[in-house]
Length: 141
Image (cartoon, rainbow, N blue to C red):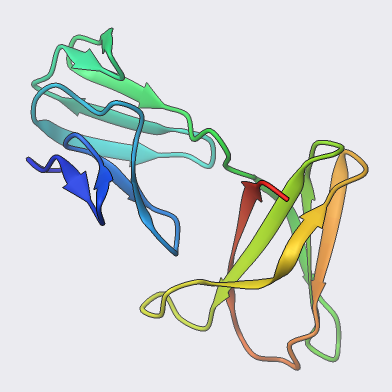
């Protein structure tokens, strides 16, 4: 949050998010200063001296739901270090996995987008035991 209109070249009126690869705005932003933020795995709550958030009357409080966030259902590691990530998916949708070895290094995509044919999708990364952070993005093919 801040007094900015752009983040990383994207329109972002006073509030932005980082997905591990790029900055982007959170909806149409907030109409004045935000002073408090809290996040869950599904939404971001913002409080401040604004009366409009996301183009709607909000009276000092707004909730933002990411349009393509993908909650992770489970993560498991095999004895040889392979990581399996399972998430709730939508059939006929595409997902892209990004990873980073630390949170200071930008996330990079792993392979091509994954096509989901069921309500649960599993991705296995044969990384040979290298510790990684992962982000799942709902994307186009």
